[in-house]
Image (tube, rainbow, N blue to C red):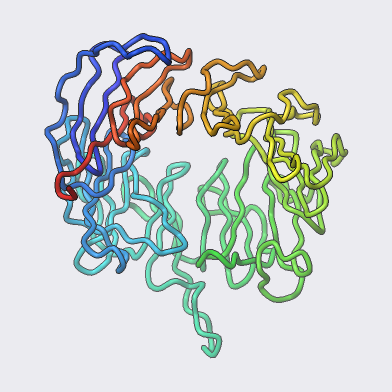
Length: 439
């Protein structure tokens, strides 16, 4: 399988690897044949991964005002949607550029801030009649009209009319705009807010779980906190004080696990509850980390300063952190709480595609497998996780960071010649060289 590489951000140029280089991690990389895939574009200030065959590119025109000029290029590097639109974000809630996983995305007008939906051919499906739109999930996109129903002055007589609903991939209104706020759909259900209470609806807009839970807010986000379902369960945090509470405040909130019918399976008065696997959870507070099964049985306890962090979805090894003197050591435990990889590393990343990046005391990174075997030695100053069979790796050479890629066996697939590199998405990866504008 051929993989393509795009220069971006500092220098936007795409190249396609005609033959992957096979060599040892510490050997000089063999010369690889590459062909020019996209002409250099030195003006891109930011790029995003390919989704649905399109990648967003941006020009910064008013950074502090929160606006970027946004467009989309196709697999040939040509613009499918010209960079004449706006990418809006807030300081606390930067969502990234809209993507086309479902073949449709909501894009904001540069003129008046309205949002319209476009398909992956660049055709506009709606007028710019919306004020916000998120990415599609389960075939529906959370969409807003009017001003945000959550933010209103305390001295107002009545809250403003609800204005969040859902649009389908054709730009049609699938679920009316009748909620104060909504979460994205997950496993066919989405949390929705009316007033200060949230429940869950299905993709037909039917209320499945009533508005029985008082919402909480995060002090770091503008929007209220709404939960989502994963493996048939949702971890919900709700206020118990009679007023909207800060998310995570143990004196005024409670956390429960519910099923898709809204039945409470377990409740917790303290601590952070995090998914581990489909039948395990991690409960962490200031005193300990606990592994529990789906029935609430405690399988393992780790007293502070020992601490557990959940893995990526699909993996069953949680990060295990201990403190030795003034230093941190990390390893991994399994779903029963058994230490399967001793806490011997300065830092670790969660497993991805069967390998986890680990850092030694010399601050050099390598990769281990799920048995703890060192598959790729500690030879790099920085790394990214594996994606589509490759991981971006970096070495400092004369004070300059040079990036390339290794495969899952530790072979250098792409020489370390780039000034930055991103993960693969749909067989494509952005890489960058210095921009002469900044020389």
